[in-house]
Amino acid sequence: MKYRVEFTTSAAKELRKLRKSIQPKIMEAISARIDELAAEPKPPGAEKVEGYDYWRVRSGDYRIVYSVEDEVLTVVIIRIGHRREVYQRL
Image 1 (cartoon, rainbow, N blue to C red):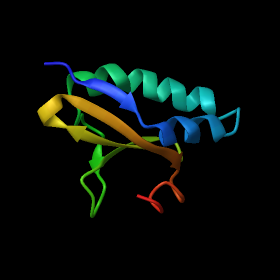
Image 2 (image 1 turned 45 degrees about the horizontal axis):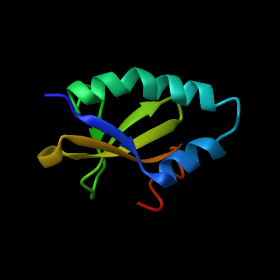
Image 3 (image 1 turned 60 degrees about the vertical axis):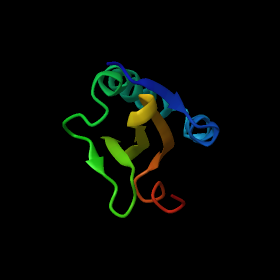
């Protein structure tokens, strides 16, 4: 079964606000992970965010935080940002 991968409006906005030099790197990481997340939403390298029902994957100093909705087969990307800031407003 394949999961559908979606972005929240705020995650898309955070991606657009990143420095122009960082955006392609993050988009490449997301693109590479989308097929992986669609097939297996909790792949090797993904870690659970402590205290939340969210998962995260790393891309250098940046993190992609997402939730997995197993009942509707959806992966929702919630936050994208630098590791020092991404967890502050979860």
